[in-house]
Amino acid sequence: MAKKPKEKFTGYQVFVIAILAILQFTVVLDFMVLAPLSPIVMKEMGFTASQFASVVSAYAFSAFASGMLAAGFADKFDRKKLLLFFYGGFILGTLFCALSVNFGQLLAARIVTGLFGGVIGSISFAIIGDLFKMELRGRVMGVVQTAFSASQILGIPIGLYLANKFSWNVPFFAIVGFSILVAIPVFMYMRPITSHIAANKGRNAFIHLWKTLTNSNYARGFLATTLLATGGFMLMPFGSNYATHNLGISLQDLPFLYAITGMFSIVFGPIVGRLSDQVGKFRMFLVGSIITITIVAIYTNLIYSPFWLVVLLNVILFVGISARMISAQALLTAVPSPSDRGAFMSVNSSIQQLSGGIAAMFAGMIVYQSKDGMMHNYPTLGIVVIVSMVIAVFLIRMLDRMVKRNPEGQAATPIPEPEQAESDLLDQDLPGVI
Image 1 (cartoon, rainbow, N blue to C red):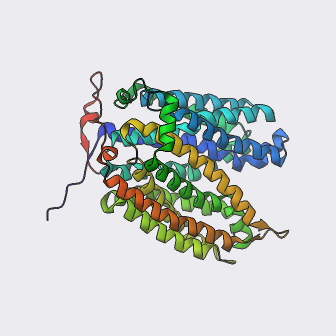
Image 2 (spheres, rainbow, N blue to C red):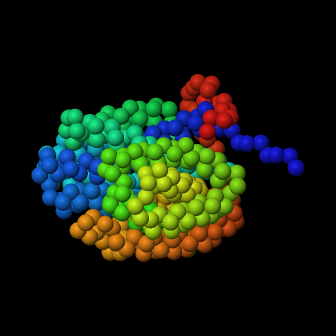
Image 3 (cartoon, rainbow, N blue to C red):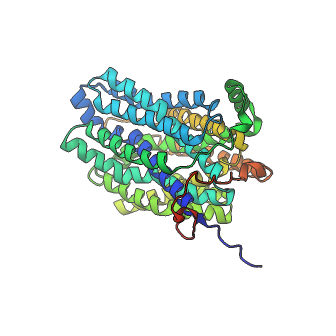
């Protein structure tokens, strides 16, 4: 049997993938950089622990609210204009963070940043679903999702360096400057994405939202997202404390642990994306789940361990998590019809934010830290995470079967022609780029 030739990306598609990945990097970095700055911010601003916690959580809750509010309108506008609108608001919110001088100002700034930044990921995923066929979405997601790893090994260390050398708000000024540079090519070169608008003309935004929320097929996707977020957010908040106190990793070695893990995640993300396109989204998710469940069972029962072993287990764990998240996100883009894709992704993003916050709170009820710093009940937490992952496998299997019966969700919108002559590179096929 002849081997099916691998799909090629055009120059324009490569541009879209690259710009969405870089854009996602800025949004993720803005979200992640504040927590590591806690010692500096609390000292310079005179915050209490509860005040700082409020500032951090304000982003997640406002992102949830904006995602739900934007869902009804997400399919009524050109996705490019919607992306630029929310990205512009995100840049202003980040600028307000940099200019804040007291608790009230910083809290308000984080709310504004979350209101705009929390929607950008869902718009990006809707664009991926619009412009790329199902057979290519794993590879695309594999590249775009590396934004999380890149922010971990590049953005956060640079942010900490700038904060230590100058002031806590300098990293936010840097994010603003870089984000403006990212917005320029989006404005100049991204083509309008409007094919979904006709199907939503005259459609009431709130009725559209209600129908999206009450669609039984979509509800399965939302439930799967809830369980996907549960596993990661349960382990993440206590990862550093568990590594330093229970496993014996020094504070000096902790940055190296995250850096090495992040570098491997950047390398394996695109590989996992390619494999999910070649072997199937569900099969890749199943392999990733087996890897993750195995490592979680081992890792949450460890005692003092050598640094190399902790690094090895973390690398394998994040490879498994990447396999689950990339394949699942690619699959979820095919759940809604094109006319509902923006609304579905907005609701899905909101649910991910909310379920992640609830999962972290629930994890805090299971584990506790004794006076000597040791984290207790971590094996119990591991069991809860494993159970959620097993249930997620069955849900993703159901979605996979449903998607295979839904060719409309798998199809991509033909890429619009440029309004004026552009470089020939944008119309060339570029094999092997991604």
